Length: 130
Image (cartoon, rainbow, N blue to C red; front, side, top):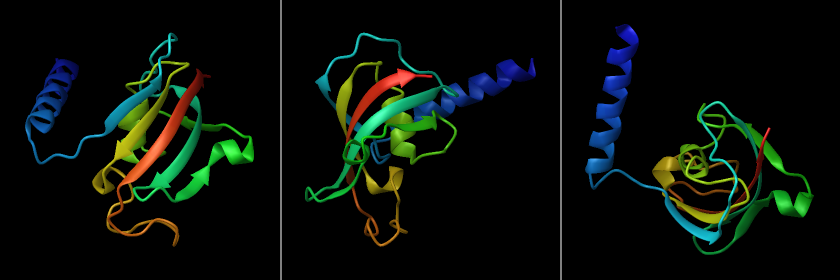
């Protein structure tokens, strides 16, 4: 019975969050469609990405390194905007994720590279679920 209650609460939360206009959302613009599976929370996913500030300045790119980036989805290993955005993608898809600062690095920014309160744009390709 506890589990059911927990799930119901989560559902209610999600509904109220999406219903509020002031809640930041990740905007996803598909560049190419994917026909693979959609990853689930806890899956280890592999992506290629290019991260840009809203003015187009590239601050990080796995493509430049030639090394895909792996992380576990939905467990806060990455910024919230990634957890939310990548969860909407299918393997093989490439999309542009527009991530508001609140779902990115927020007021802190990151390592002198990302200023405080910066909206971010990531070109993300979901390569696989490992």
